[in-house]
Image 1 (cartoon, rainbow, N blue to C red):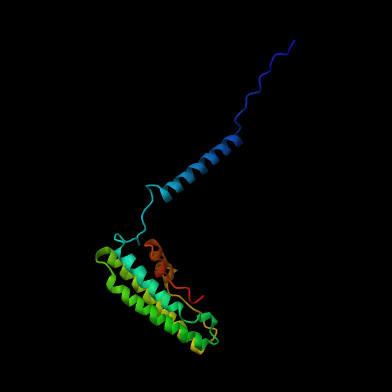
Image 2: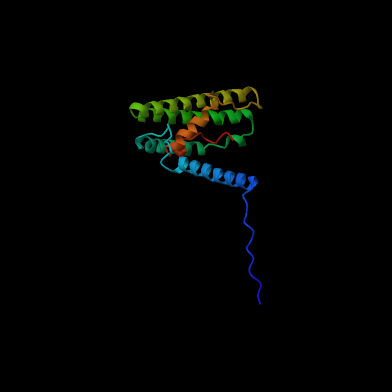
Length: 178
């Protein structure tokens, strides 16, 4: 004869188990909300995003041409002296200044134009920083490159964010100093 089946004891919900379930459900809900904000309809467009991509397309071509010209210069880091490095930087700075001058008349009207004007102003500040660095190299071989801050961020952060938001990779800050 077989023994009757015994029922398993009922599981009780202890406070520790309840707390763990609440934590896991809370974390899942938090990640769901984060993903909703990042990819869903809760995502806000960047304030730097231009409504008309025409400027970005034209600017990308202008910036690519400037970077191509600067790439023909000897690498500044490989210069034999600080004075040579300063001379190379001066040439690169001159080309990038021409780039910014070429971009300015392409700026659109209205709100997009204001955003582009602020970006161009940041580029001019950055070029002033590069020129100051080249000047400093002439008197101090150990001079450091210092980038101007705006709202507790370097202006390069704003330049690069605008370029990324508008798919203008060539219009980000150049990497010829590093």
